[in-house]
Image (cartoon, rainbow over all chains, first blue to last red; front, side, top):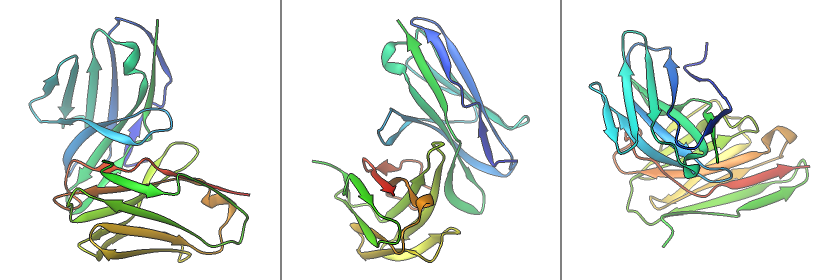
Amino acid sequence: RKEVEQDPGPFNVPEGATVAFNCTYSNSASQSFFWYRQDCRKEPKLLMSVYSSGNEDGRFTAQLNRASQYISLLIRDSKLSDSATYLCVVIFFGNEKLTFGTGTRLTIIP
Amino acid sequence: DTAVSQTPKYLVTQMGNDKSIKCEQNLGHDTMYWYKQDSKKFLKIMFSYNNKELIINETVPNRFSPKSPDKAHLNLHINSLELGDSAVYFCASSQLGPGANVLTFGAGSRLTVL
């Protein structure tokens, strides 16, 4: 089983819709969680950190479920510019490197 | 000003050749990384240096040799290139060390081995 798993998609979603996707991690001793965004042929960029209590940044909401070992990303009122690959990132205790999921590809359709 | 810059952006070469990719950051970060993203878009760490010292060395063939002349530079040299080395190589940097949440990536160097 991979350390960090995501549904690769693609998710094709009409503009204005709400979309959510999850990321599961295998190691319960996980320390920190993040969502990065990668546009086609570009570098990954930090979208948001994921806090235990859940957090929101504009149209984006991130949540952590430690019991079930997954994090989620919800995008409301999706825009064409949200089309990208969303990468889940986990840092495990005792292993200080960032471990990336394979990413979920999202396409917003006009 | 580009925060993390890597050159070349594209590299096409024959199997068996030796090539280098250079990376420089002007953010004043202490830690730099090399990541490899393969055709399936899986992003995997290769190396990490903190203030010129190697701190992460994943299971990478000996043909890959990183070099950090100072904390602002981390170069990657690859000997005897193989078809499977074709990928996008991303350089990145962070301030607080490998556990830092914010990695700033370079634009990537797309290596194609023929």
